[in-house]
Amino acid sequence: MSTVLWPNQPASLAKALGIDASVHHQRCRGGDGPQATTTLMAQRIASGHVGTEGLILLSGAMAANTLRAVVRQAAGEELRPYEGARGVDVQKLVRERLGWGEDLGSLPEFSGTSEVFNNEQERRHGLHAPVDAYPLYESRLRHAYGHGIEEHQRHVAEIMSRFTKVAASGFNAGCAWHPLERSSGEIATPSPRNRWVGWPYTKYMNASATVDHSASWLMCSVATAERLGIPEEKWVYVHGGAYANQGDPRSRPTWFVSRWGEHSRIPAMEAALRGALASARLTADRVQHFDFYACFPSVVQMAADCLGLPHDDPRGLTVTGGLPYYGQCGTVSSIAAMLQALRLPENRGHFGLVSGNGGLGQKHAAGVYSTAAPDRAFQEVPWAKTQAKVDALPVAPFADSPRGAAEILTYCVKHGRQGPLDCIVIGKLRSTGAHFIANTPRSPELFSDMMSSEWIGRTGTVAASPDGRRNIFTPDGVPLRSRV
Image (cartoon, rainbow, N blue to C red; front, top):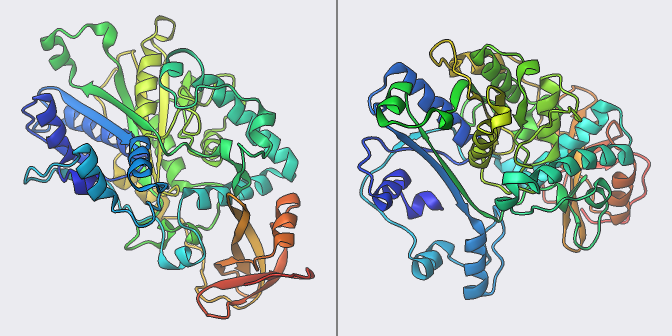
């Protein structure tokens, strides 16, 4: 919506601040964007790109809480992330009530990849938003680790409890949306205030998407900083950066979650993280501070796994507390907090690694920072190089209209405020090995069983729903009182 209200957001910001900017650059939506743009600008500065002779202001913001309050007050409706508000023209409302929006008659440079994160078939099966996708990865991780249901819930809750401590401490306590330390038991246990959202995630494991947050930082060359007299104790150097995508929505189907060959790892994430370290000529053991993008616990675990870090690494896996507790504003918050941490006297000379994740896990960026001066000019790992590593991986066969004997590869149980609504299954045909997306019959008894015992690997039959719009996976040997 913001690009409709402000077609050239950088120009509108520059106008509001009284800045005569020579370049206006905008990144498409996604949590990877701020980190990817920082890497892009670092490379432009190092290459002497036109428009980088002075200061570069990078800024990001989210005002979802304000939007929700305006919609609730003016229309009596709830504004829900990724859904909007029923019967409300939100754009018109905020123009009238808040005076938001400005068209300066120009467009910015634009970078980034598609904001379309799912396809029509996924939407028909209920895979709409992050709360529908990331639980699929968590279930597959549980299976990959060999954990039981309760064991894995404790494991995840312990990780996130440590994140709450970071969000509630120091610099973060004044900025975090939920600066409240929570125990692992409180996070893992469903309650009226901590309901299931997309099982296996309780509400306290989900990103806080309805927040008001913003952050900004300035970038320039060393020569410019010296010319402007910026004190050196304020400097933080960009040592490395890389980014990669999980396919392409136009040309490579692995962009879409249902087409991934495996859901316990994300090759684009691995390429970005390892590429950023290679760009900085570092290994993970030389990094003292990490901020892994933490919209949901699954991506934290996958990021740690790809660098060989234990999930309870004593260095910690966050400097913000993550999106469930600090709040969701992409890597804007992560970079700002990392810069703050690295400039503390006790951390000078340390290295910090920030990762960003966009969409449903399709877009990834990472960067390395330090107050220690690098011994060479910045050089990102070229996007084509990191992307080639991802695109070289084989594409799993996929069946749009699967029929016959099948087994479950991963699954999640979608919930509303009143309880379970549906189950999304990623499965595999036993005859051909082709993957597919499906729903199960809508049976309360089945949902309860799938939440209390492991169903990955369970067999059944997949067929078309009566209206032919969806695939329905019916498990073997389970009597059902349900509706399709």
